[in-house]
Amino acid sequence: MELKDSYRFQAKQADRRSAGQAASESASQLLGPLPTTGKGVGVAIIDSGVALHPDLTDSLAASVVCTPNGVYDQDLLGHGTHVAGIIAGRGQQVRGVAPDAKIISLQVVRGDEGAAKTPEENQQQQVDSIGSLLGALDWIVKNKDEYNIKVANLSVSLFPIIKKDESGAEYFLNPIGEAVKRCVEAGITLVTAAGNLGDRDNSVITYPAACPEVITVGAFDTHGTVATSDDDLAPFSSRGPTFEGEIKPDLIAPGVSILSTNASGSQYDQGSQIRQRILAQAMAGGIEAAQAVMTAVHSGFIEKEAFKQAKAQGLPLAQAVQASLKIYPTEGTQPGGSPAYIALDGTSQASPLVTGVVANMVEANPDLTPQQVKDILRATAQPLPELAAHQQGAGVLQAGAAVEAARRLGRVLK
Image 1 (cartoon, rainbow, N blue to C red):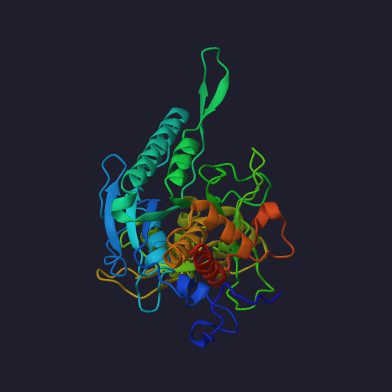
Image 2: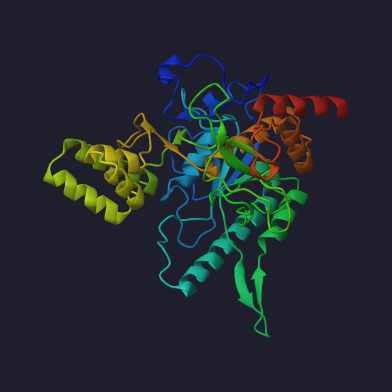
């Protein structure tokens, strides 16, 4: 199926493709040129913070810490910086969807909390995370006029807390829904990742993704080709309906191997470099290589079951590692020596593509309400014929069509 208004730039990209394939693609390469750039629009990024990356320093209008002991100019995880680059990165080659938008970072995840060791500790982490998210949502409502915040990206997933009442009966404590409603009523469009809980129905079970008021975004795989005939839903992408019967996601966007800004020294940055070293050792061969690979299997860098299957097929060590080790493609170098850009997968990467488009829509028509934004995105989306509504919502994001529809609506209303 070929779409008239492609969601990917249809110009030749021979320098980025080999035999019709691309290892990774940036937001601007996926969506192509748009008539607007998000100029003057404030975009809140509720995430792990935004590092002082060269492509983002001119876009960053404010950084707010919503976690205990957080640091405003650090992103220890690397997640928020990657999201920010997809939305508003200003690199010459790797550009965001809305490079002239102003981003406001609200840090709700520090990235160094570590895994919970007990159920009680896990629940406390959940309570703390919900509290941080509620604080961020409250902040953007109070400060929306100062920063012209029109849209917020929430590539975060939280489970409701299970509590017990006085009779001992269990119930869900979920204050996120009410906070979401207050934001939308204040005129802020909320775009959120559907989650990465995989290929079963009713897997959109986290919040804010399950809230009816938000724009929930799933992920599909372009397979690195310009043609749309090989596009399919990413295996990890959560799908609905929600337990309340809402058809989610609302639409889907590319979410596999999305190239964006890398936070130097973050978990993603360090993990990428470790994986590259593991692969290099495996390729070198010998006893030391075998020892390094087994250490990587035990530490979780190499997926254990995939590695066992590869070895059972008789693959040599290096090929078995390649088949079971997730390598994050990187490009360029930034001050300090870390890669300038890294390619990641997830609905967390699909969501900011839509957020950036919303910033462009709002520039084209500043009077848009959150409901009108959602209606336009859904009306202009193109469904993939082999997918059900609870897998893809209205279908594939059509960036140019959505911006033009927003502009036309503004003209009609005037």
